[in-house]
Length: 278
Ligand SMILES: [Zn+2]
Image 1 (cartoon, rainbow, N blue to C red):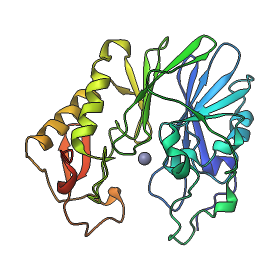
Image 2 (cartoon, helix red, strand yellow; image 1 turned 60 degrees about the vertical axis):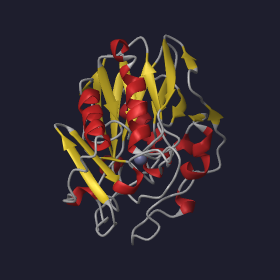
Image 3 (cartoon, rainbow, N blue to C red; image 1 turned 90 degrees about the vertical axis):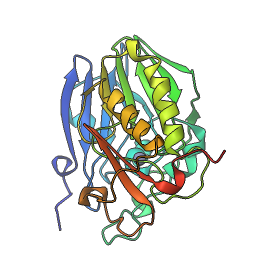
């Protein structure tokens, strides 16, 4: 059993720009950790995603001393619990409202050292965000783009003044899964993922760096082009490979589950949910 009793067991922090830090969060029951981002504005800080450590990520950030400004809000890139578990430690939570139920549902309930619901502060209100909203934090306006496909509540967050784009799990270099179970859920198709990536391509001149939810950060914005090309290959009828790497988790035996690789892009998908229903 891995010790997870100290802040150092659960978190690490690294500065990635003069006013931005990435906070790595770890959880022993899963092979991945979520990367959260601390954004320092003129008079306050905001956090993008909150991990799912049982320790208090707000207290951890305070303990690092990287900034004295109050952390007034968390903004969720999407509703998966590895990004939302620490939400309740902050005074305000912004998210796409369709994600509220998922954001308050700890996952991993069938793994032995899985989180228990009562280990997390889940009694918090959400403040909805929608396509085109600009959250006016002093000196650091953040613009919202809806990009749901991996998760229907996904948003991208454009840090207008600092030319950074936060993309959650929809655009990352390690492993982007889009409805690998192949269930017919509107929006959870490769076709819709590609449409969302085109939306981010339409503002390609407005950012230099992409900050994803996992597997390395920041990454060059050309990562977007590689993800788009992988989507294009799938949509053209090239269904990649069924050789799924172990890092994708315990997902063997899902009928139709495939992976498309192109340079840094790895897209997990299901042949049944490549295209929109009509
Ligand atoms: Zn996710």
